[in-house]
Length: 378
Image (cartoon, rainbow, N blue to C red; front, side):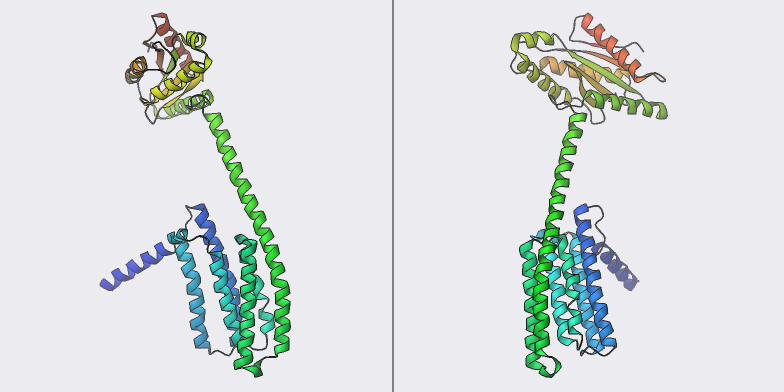
């Protein structure tokens, strides 16, 4: 049983270690790129194993398999760092340069032990550098190219010193020169494509920010920051459908600031704007999270009170009225009050019917002296 528990714990640990981060778009993209890098390395590994199978690789197959396991383990480590989020601690969370360096080191290993077809192996360098298109800047591309060329030069020097009979130095130097001509140009093209991707990414981010601003302008009143009339009406329609579907109750309250025109006439429109903003902030102190409060037009505001009958809605708006009455408004030397009309939704009626009931109750509150709450008849 202890063995089974340990095995189960180990499997759960591996599952957590290599769980694809699908809930984080940035991490998911990095994980996909790492898996693509692994596929690129597997291409090189497969070629190496085939060369070993046909006798063109000097290392014993058993020893080669240990190196293959090490290469795969390194890529698994990169993937695990992304899945666990530890990669965020690095300057480059994608670890692109580190993965390219690891692949180049593997290429150096292959170039040293392979026989006869060393020139063909150099083509695989392009497979490695394609991965850099995702993230590398031009300086990093050039740096990776220089590292690859230096690594190949080191392999040539090592073979010329330890196994001179296995190489033709002139051919190797010619291949190095060809690689030196191709890699920098490939790096420049890769960097150019990477810059285009970065520019597109930045444009997409700017577009997303612009769309967020537009959506907020559509759904919120620019002056007070509360919901707009359109958003309130949409919420009323959704709540009406919900009430009909689930036999729920809800109410609508309409607010009108008393004698607001006199505030604009006596103190100016800027002072009136400050009063509207301060009023909206004051009301929201008593608005529940499930309710919708917004500006209906001019000095009129609306409050959708969800899951409430007329009695509960009346208590809520009465607290709001009292708070507004006691609130000290900036830039005005008089008391600001509000009249409120509240109505409960009746099954089968339209949103316009509900607004009409609340509107008539509001006019009743104003006609009876202002600074009070009036309820529509049930």
